[in-house]
Length: 473
Image (cartoon, rainbow, N blue to C red; front, side):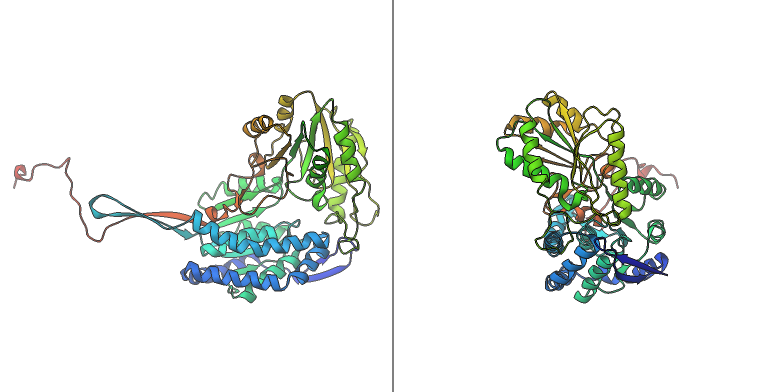
């Protein structure tokens, strides 16, 4: 059987590949990982630096493929390839800082040593919105730590995943150490449940994350790292520069056509005095170009990943309208047969029982509140906890926001999206399971081993023994 990848902008076929077998790929990885782990960290780091050079040399080709397969504007696809390259040096630094060997002196000439070991074989399930950067954020630190990896890319972006793996192999990562599993949900389930993996590194929806969490409850010996989505709040309160605030709101809500887990889903503003900010934001939104990823001039937004995704976003938007939401900018679909959507803003202030869900597309919900305390309460009115941002010129507001809002990323006068790779990245609530990635990925790719060491046996038992002179013959 084969898997076919099509271009969302045109519907044209761009890639085909044979569907793989999870058990076979895990078996190959198990045979290969010990030799890879036996190499020095320096050896593995140099191999991955060669990988970065291979990707750098293929930047245009790789970006073109990501743009066509994921529907991203070419300019944005190039930034993703740049992130793939940059991940190597960041991960090497992170591994050195987060998992160094440590030795301290102990009693009787002993030493206490702390070193780290790889888990063995780690499975990686990648998403379609960043088909190279996000799985690469798991794969690079996993390989650096000495693990073997079985990587299943999203069935919606398999070509980008295959290209990524080819770059690793070209750089000298043994084929047995990094395996590519092509397939759909069935192959993903088979990989996640395979007894031969020692852990799973997952990026995707909160719904799937919860399923995996329940599944792994019976295997506490296996690692599970979850990166899920968010219903992210953006509070705009007492800004100094309305134009800059409008740009931040637009970027937060509509970058990647809203297909980033950190995109702002809810804009929270004061009941009175928000009109100028909304007006400036609408001026920008009305200028957003939605077009083919390789269009000239380059668009701000391309299509969504496929028609199914666009249909879902439209259904969620219509549900908000049916519940009493007031459209400020309608969600339109210029071409019914293709997954293009225009950016939408809808006032949901008076919608009762608003659905606490991630609308994974270009829909921003406006919520008006009476005071800043209510804004914080509204920001926290979610099961998710990935990203949050406040736009304000008042430091005291930011301090209060930071102290009371529950999220793994909390920004001040910055967009909700665009988290730096040089810092930890992860969420709370149903947005993750307290295993942040990015700079902290080193923490879950190796486990610490504590050793008390002495060159000689020195021991005695000083308490609780009978006097030897009192023992009977």
